[in-house]
Length: 291
Image (cartoon, rainbow, N blue to C red; front, side, top):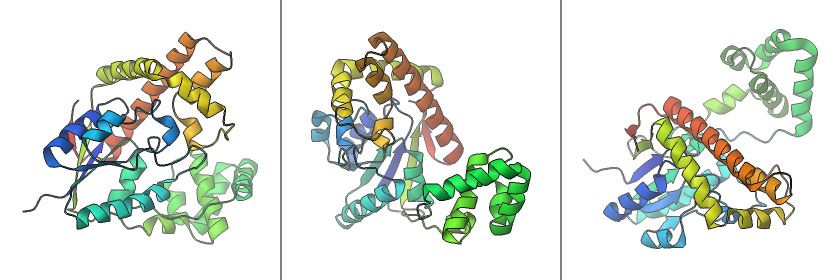
């Protein structure tokens, strides 16, 4: 039986994905394709520990540093960008190794994501206002009239998902549950294998702390200074990368460098913990490597 040409390599930040990807690419000749939402941005090489020029020279890399920080990439946009890359590699008979820590990117590949139209902020605010006015019980009853599956599925107290389901139905005239059911995975079953790097938490946190120290040595402050100087919208994905807010506070004179480093370490650990939990819950059937 022919082995799948596509390998999905996932895991939390600082778990050693890039190093393992280089080792695997060296053995198989695979092209390494980015599946991390922050490593897309050209402005964030240091803060996201994007592969260095020397590492990129060891194996072919695709979709790293291809976006400007002023440009907000969504999961859908990444999916549209990665599809032709995978098609080209398949046509050439070349293996692909998709590497990253963004869970929804892997979901789009293996399960599909609904292409739900954007909901204007005024509609979202109206949904939130209705929830505030009538309370959860009544709101849920009204939601059941337009999206009964969502009303049943969404857990008690989950205001964000309840109001989103209402807003989508209001804006599109179609239930969010119908949108999400109408999905097709990018990768066909049997065409890929999945591997999650899953270090124990103590080891992972130590690696996170070491990662932050290396970032500072490699020029994280200069990278953040250049990013802040552009005056970009703080809501942009690149501006929400771990370390941007923390080091920007230091550069603005609001905190010491030591405090900024400590805050970045904690934020990195928190992010890694969320990633560990996501992959544990969403990819239980994938193979595991303990780090």
